[in-house]
Image (cartoon, rainbow, N blue to C red):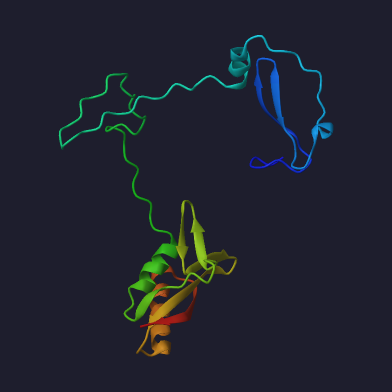
Length: 188
């Protein structure tokens, strides 16, 4: 059933008032096409309306609006309880050391001539860490040791082999293990 218009064969009850029922029949339909079912008269139309309409939802009070730059008076009511959070005296945990993928990304971005890291057309080149990801770096542990792939975007005008060698050396110094550098794109 549609909410805008009834189908051609779908009669619709429009209103029930006292003892009268108004029926809208499909276009072209005559009185012989409308079936009347047993109808009980309604004594009080207000009873029908009360059953059909849900009770109104109480509205929340709106905060007062400041007019002409004057401060609005405070709204009386219960004060919200403070959110539970770390107390000022609770010890702060020490910062965690950066992951090897983050160190590799920082080392690659520090090389002059690297415009950025390339995360792939769909973001598939990344290392996923708890609560974050490092786009452009794949870092894996294998039985042979650590393996890191760094996908960079190079700036135009430099020697790409020299750039790749420099990125390789800096990333290897930062994380160790096998390092593979891929120049995926060029940027002006």
